[in-house]
Image (cartoon, rainbow, N blue to C red; front, side, top):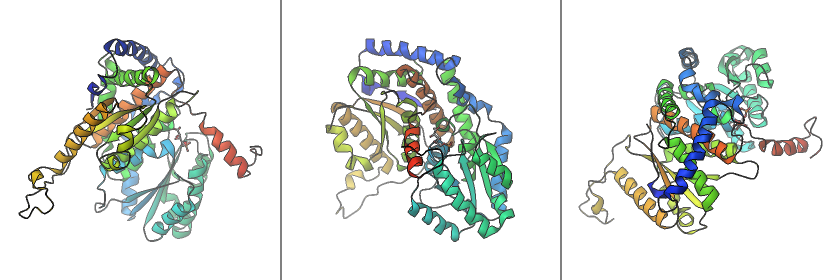
Length: 435
Ligand code: PA5
């Protein structure tokens, strides 16, 4: 489970202010729970943890097992934005950083950029491996994954033949619409549906996230259980103690009344780097509209204390932090005593490396709060599927409340269309002639 602590905001907000914002947050909570707010056609994510049928997980496992039988050792997962970041986050968090377990394919993402070099290098890798591909696009029309898929599909067809290619490609897309849906039907690909009522950035617990996570060898049942536990907790507790209500109310108070316009998601392990990326998309696309919104940024410490630490401690005072704290390491490594002690580290002898990390975290918290950076902390016991599921759900629910507090529709992204229109005009896409 996730624990929430906002003591680090005590010197920045008063009890009276907090109570006022909690009342507004509870109104937003009611809108979210009743499905009466803007964008309410897209609330399917709220009940996903308890709605996902066992048969869907079994279908994902069937793909995993079929590809294992073919000896597939590289799965290219094509998608961008919400069709990429949730599974990337979970896989990065749960995987060994350097070594792939026997019998588990390497997962490589593509279609999340338009870099010719990146895609060429993906093909270089494909050429020396046994490849399958999952292409994910809810709309089925997004340019970046479509370009990557055309090229990767062609490679798979040429290498394995059309019939075998159709067994090595799986599509995750809309039930009815879009170019990818049509293509998947014509080619006879196995397909998974992205539910109509779940938007991209809220889709990690649909096949968009679940299929790649299963293919990478992780336990999505545990992830769904963690999310379901959080769903129950947040949806049954309509009170000022509900952590999602508190998180949404404090961040809005800091933003609207105290001038803190940037929130930094901070973690102390590189394994959670992509939690920051997923969270930035979730809050950035949900809240940043109509001239409003808290700018979401992220850092990985202690690495970034040696790059962004100076700014956070001492630069423009419009920053607040939300730390995702991991209480226990999944590994065990101690600094041992050294008779020579040339490196003068014997004062750490007998200490776990993670203890040093925890002290860095504590010291940094104290320094940043003293330096004028309010801080909230979300703690999980350790990184595992269950706790990631809880975190996903916690942030999605909080985001819904927070965006309603801001007065925006959390579930649309009209601003994303502007660049597309100009890019299409420059690329001379039919129907987009004027910039
Ligand atoms: O959150 C969103 O809706 C977006 O980030 C989409 O996920 C992203 O644009 C990709 O869209 P699609 O899955 O339709 O290719």
